[in-house]
Amino acid sequence: MNRENQSTVSEFLLLGLSRKPQQQQLLFVLFLSMYLATVLGNLLIILAISADSRLHTPMYFFLCNLSFVDICFSSTSVPKMLTNHILGIQTISFRGCLTQMYFFIVFTNMDNFLLAVMAYDRFVAISHPLHYSTKMSHQLCALLVIGSWVMSNLNSLLHTLLMARLSFCADNTIPHFFCDVGPLLKLSCSDTHLNEMMIVTEAALIMMIPLAYILASYIHITRAVLRVPSTKGKLKAFSTCGSHLTAVSLFYGTIIAVYFNPSSSHSAEKDTAATVLYTVVTPMLNPFIYSLRNRDLKGALRKVMGRTCS
Image 1 (cartoon, rainbow, N blue to C red):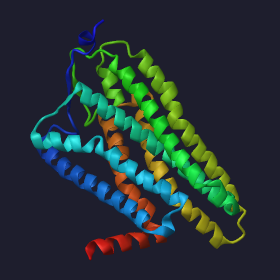
Image 2: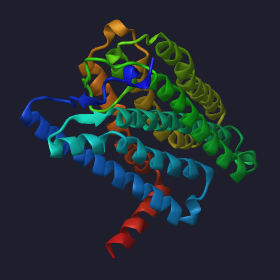
Image 3: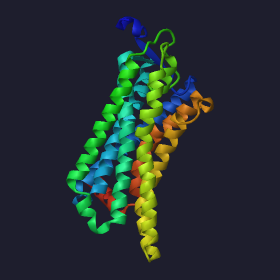
Image 4: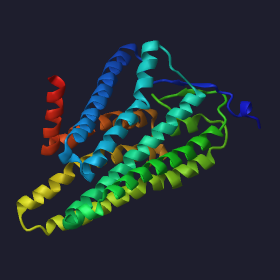
């Protein structure tokens, strides 16, 4: 079968979040505001960490990478949606759709891996404080981040190539605001068994192994904290993990709701709402989550904002 017969659909229609004009205007303003807040908030985190030498530690190195990934994560879907609204179009080319899906998977995986790496950092800091500087060396931190990028791109490449081999014949309407794996598989008029099997096995492992490691890390962290004699010491130890736990709950809670629930419980509206949470809302909230309870980071942010204003 030649390439022309495999992909007779040359473009897709992204229906977005609503078809009502008044709701579309409101959603445009809302998503534009959230996207600007995401970019500004995460850029401030990156600038604050880069400018303050006291924050040049493994924890803030990983947080800096997470902020960069969150900017890219939102940028894979929101700008296209806003542009389509301004221009009054809903189309995205076949290649553009696969490209958007590729980067969406990359940055989803990067968030996943970085949250696991940050859990490991907190585990070493609390359970082995005397050996923290030797265990969390600059070389290991760099290797963990580079390894995350390599794994994320390989995983994304696999699913993109599997999607590219499918046929899309008649229906080209995606009831979503970006090209996600699930809605695309539903539109295919060829056998999607291999794609679905890889999602259930390989993709599930990519997501669930880091989550299992995060949970195991926090079990060990809790045991170590409970051995601390003073109440003040326990609260201080738990407070260093509170922000990370909040981010983990937001990210994995919505991921599991969308991709790992029985198909009978799925609906386009519920899946889209849950996707908005982890693609737009969570990246926007992360700067607030990590800065509100962190004195060092708040101090660095004040310095950066003071310099900007002056």
